[in-house]
Amino acid sequence: MAFETPKINYSGKIREVKLGKSKNVSVGGESAYPLYLFEGENPNQPKIAMEVFDLAPEEWADAAIAPFKDVAGDPVAWAKLNVEQHGADMIALYLVSTDPNDKNMDAAQAAETAKKVAQAVDVPVIVYGTGSEEKDAEVLAKVAEACEGLNVIIGPVQEAGHKKIGAPCIGYKHTVSANTPIDVNLAKQLNILLGNLGVNADNIIIDPTTGGLGYGIEYTYSVIERIRMAALTQQDAQLQQPIISVLGREVWKCKEAKMGAEDEKYGDPAKRGILMEAVSAVSMIISGADIVVLRHPETVKLIKQYLKAFFN
Image (cartoon, rainbow, N blue to C red; front, side):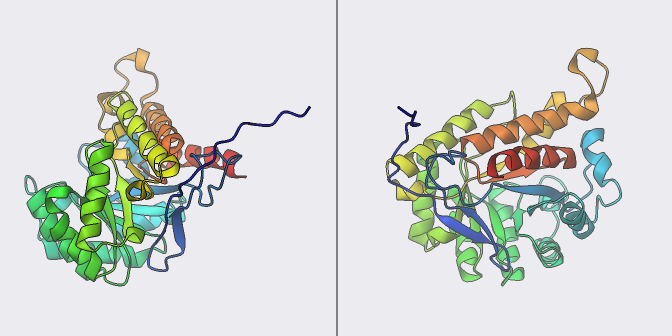
């Protein structure tokens, strides 16, 4: 008697969300658990977004800044480099210049930068503020207006400011990155609030907040896994959205990724952060992330090889 692999019958499905100005990049669409290709469909391979900052980073580890030293401070050139040379599927632009506790740059100027980056590349662009409720509401509303017709992904959209940012996203037809602090119920609640506001479910991705390796990644893994279980086996329509894991910044701000070679037991400082980022990315993909935001080109290579092993 031939062995038959036991299979789960899934009653739900993840929504497929189309991203980018041409809407030619799709995420989601799964009808089975992540990478369970023997049980159902995973029609869209997880996408890799690479970071771009609108200001030259001042506190990055040497290993992290080295690949971008010629373009740091020029977000358009940086975005093109990530797409054309490093194979980024998407760009994640951080408007760090608008941080009210630092440069506090003008919202209109930041929006113009976002527009230039979105126009310069053919891949979808994620535009992130700084997490400051008041300033992000101003900045991201301007971004939504400036980037009309480019279908960017805008975030973080949190419960406190979801109306001020969500409404412009509706009006100018952008996708919302709904950010909550590592909690299944809060993720569901924010999706409900966005739906009540008028944001179409086809324009929402879930950002459940990602902890770096050794700094809370197990909580994120558990929450993403539970979101997927509710979406696929409990028919929870409010959680049937693609998931984005914003992990590059979280990994590279850890002391182990930033410290040099002063302690030999930590190994090669040029490889340490890359491996921490790669392990974090694999963990998030296995748990259910449809998009992972990465920093280092070598990490991107490793994750592309990993995905190729599954999908080819």
